[in-house]
Each structure stands twice: as C-alpha cells, then as structure tokens.
Length: 301
Length: 301
Image (tube, rainbow over all chains, first blue to last red; front, side, top):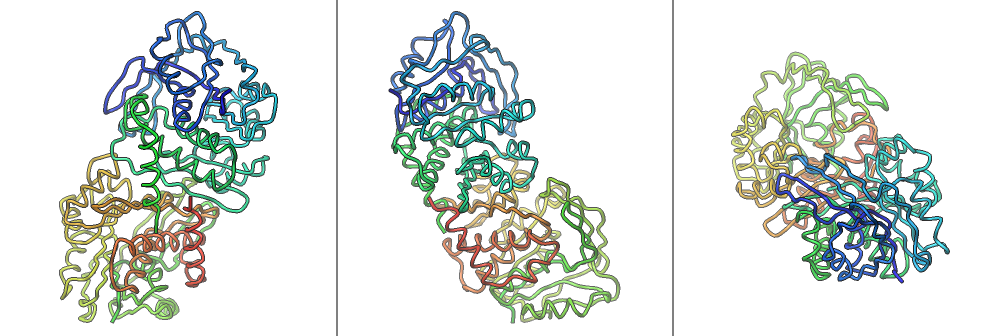
C-alpha cells in the first residue's frame, strides 16, 4: 500500500529552453511529483498512459519504488505537452497540448489507495480533484492540492471549495493574488487560513515559499541557482518532495512542514539543473541532504 | 565627526499610492539613508537644500543626531520629486523631477568627513560618486555605492568603475541582470566578485537580498508585509540601516554583513508601512530589534 497517493499526469514532454531541447521525454505532474517523493517514501500514482508508453519508463518508475496499480494502461496515445522557455526562463509558453488518453480519463482509486494518509492532488480540474478526494475511505492526515490560473479564472468557486476541503491548496504568488484579489501575499494567506486551513503555503518561484499559520510565518528562500537549465516540473517536485518527506515522518506539524518546504525547494532546485527528468534520474538522497544542509548556512545570520 | 558619511539628496517628495498621498513632504535618498542609519550611529549628510527648506525639518534631522556640516544651504528651491505607484506597488512612476538647487551642485566634503570609516554614495551620477570617493583623505573601511538603470544604460563603463572602486555596489535584480547581461543573479554576483569586490549584494525588492562571497552566499528573505503603504525610500533605508549598523560595530565581516542586511530589511519594511518618512519618525530602536528577532523565527527550520 502506498504511503502517499499522487493524482497527476504521466506524459511525454517536448521542451525547448535557451540551454537545450528534448523531444517526447518522460514528464507530467504526476511523474515529477512521484519521483521527487520517492526519495523519501513510497508513492502510488493515479493516471493513465497509452499503448505507446515504453516498458523502460515503466521499469524506471518501478525502480523508484513507485506503486503503479493506479496507473491505467489505455488504448491510444500518452498525453503530450510541448513547451518553450525564453530568457525569462520562469514562464513556459505552451506550444501544444495533446490530451490523448487523458481526455476522457475518469480516475478510479484502487481500494488500498483510499486508505492512504497522504494525498497529493496534482494541478487539474478542481471538480476532478474533489472527485478523487471523495473516493478516500478515511480522512487522510494531509491533503495537498495544486491548481493554476485557468481554473481560478474559470471555476473560482470550485477552486475555493478545493481550498476549503483540502488541507493545503498550493498557490503561487500570482495565483494567490488572482484568487483573493489582493496584492499582499500576507493578506492572501490570511484569507486561506479563514477557509478551514491551519496552514497556507504560497510558492514564489525562484524566490522560495511563504508558509503561514495563525501564529506567524516561515519564509523559505529560493536556492540561489547558477545553472538553471529547465524549470519544467519544479512546482511538482516541490509538492512531491514536501509530501514524500511528511509521509516518511508519518505526521504533520508546523516544524516538520518548515523542513518539508526546504526539502521541496531542494529537490525543485536540483531538478531545474537538467533537462526534463534528467537530473532526478541521477541524484541520490545524499545529494538532497547535502543541499538541505547548505540551506542552513544560506539563511544563517 | 560623523561615523558614516552619506552622499545623497535631501528633497521634497509628492507621493501618491493606492493607500494615500502626500504633498511636498521631506524625502530624498540622503534623508532616508541618514535617518535609517541614525538608529545605530552618527551619520553626516552631504547635499544641498534651498532657502525654502523648513527650520522644523532641519531641527528634525538634528534631533536624529545627523551631522549637517555637509548640508549646503543655497539660494533657490529644494529638489522636488513627484511620483505615483499603481497596484503593482513596487514600481514608481516619476511624474516630475525638479532638480532646483541640486542641478549644479558640486559636493564638497567638510575636512572632518574625509576621514570617515564608512561612506555611502547614494544613487547618483557615477562620475559624481567617484569624485566624492576621491575626496576621502584615507581609505574608508567600507564604501557602498547605490546606482540605477539609467546610469547603467548611459554610463556603463563608469558604473563598472564604481563597482570596482567601491567595496560594494548595491544593485537590484534587474540592474544586476542589465549590467552583466545574464538572467542568473548568481552569475551576476560572480562577475561582481571578479571586479575587486569581496562581497556582492543584490537587492530583490520584496523578496529580500542575496549576499555573495568567494565562499558561498546568504539569502535574506523579505519581511512578509501585510500593510505596504508607500515604498518610497525603502532602498535607501536598506542601505542606510545596513551602513549605520556596521558603522556602530566599527568593522566589517561576513557575519556582521549578514546581520546588517537583516537590519536593512527591517528598517526598509517598517518604512514601507507609512507614507513618506512618517513611520521612521515614530519608531525606536526597540521596534527595530523586535522585528530583527522576528526574522530569526521567520527563517528557522
């Protein structure tokens, strides 16, 4: 039984950045999050792939200890995203999105997944996120949901319902400003805390993340990266590593969440140093812990 | 004799933000920096004001322990800046700049100022900054120079000379990217370190600051502000408080610089909570130390 259930896409990505390009490489929010989580604990992934999905990649996911009972194999082609980054490398320009087998995918959790203590609802339609959440047979210790601006613009009420029903809805700074119509991230955090949340996390891209509770806040800096090669999947790595670390600990507290956010930033920053999943395929938990300790020195004063 | 010499404007500011407006209130980079420094040590200011400058404001500056021997009183009007901020409150739109008595001002340091150990060259024409630096009769312990994009665009070589001759040239993130033609702040920091600097500081506005040395770096988070009212002078407060703290310590080390950067962020964040100098007129060193200690909790993990 997986310690952490990850609902998110498994995809082929075609990516172009000023520093390189790859065609149809393994990607998708569910993949990045699961692989990032797998350094700490045993995730299970809920998604679908097509008949073109290579056995070698299936074997790679298994080799990371990722449970694949929730990964449906469907007739047709795997989801395919093509994107490009300019010199302002933080913003991706989507060239093409071919949903393929995910177009009519109805996620169905395997029975044993419904008892997991940790659930990560990857960036998706909020109705589908609520549907997956509703399939859990017991209340998880921690549910984190990711979202993005198109859902905030088109389904604001449903996104607010996700914020309310999940423990944490991961927003980045511009999404938080958009959802709560305020320029202040502190004000947005307070709105989130009012919506039935004990913790609020707002991601600030290269500038780190802001954790807020009723008592105060934690500001995690971004890791000062010299070699940013490809930011694809960094947000998913952040969420996956954060959840993977907490799933390993088996409980949630503000102090553990502070550490979890740093682990999230560490894995995201390592991921950005290679094209696609390249870097995550190479690194070990030792590399992650080394950069975690660097963070201690980076914020010391 | 002042412990810290501040070369920068003393001005009237007319400011409009979404949260308020003021007409012809005391401002200017030299004023903000000196007042911020005055919580820690004894600054002397080098600038000029016109015959319209109120005695009450002269008395206010004196009451803060600011030495005014370097403040020339000239026939004519005081420098006047009018600016406006939109909802993206980090970027000021200049409505009008009337240089008045500063138009043909040739700074001349009083003899005792030339022996100061700490020199802050406020944002100004780089040739004038180099001229003031050249007037020092002994090498100060620390020279920090501020600059801005117009000088980088029009006098790039002179700005690079300032980076080389000052100990630290304060750049913000976009200025650093512009000056060194790189998207990476870490890469820009390395270029700065090559130019005869032991320390590099890049300011990131609300996201804090990045300090780099040959050994590694320190990432100071921005203080999570709920009530940002007016950012005018925040960069000058950052530089002034940082220098004021170091001038009080009487020496420079990496560890002291980390603390100095936090003090700079603290005073800048307090300043942003009021229109113009309003907040700096009210607060005490206790308020500053309280927020400094909050920063410890904010970055703990």
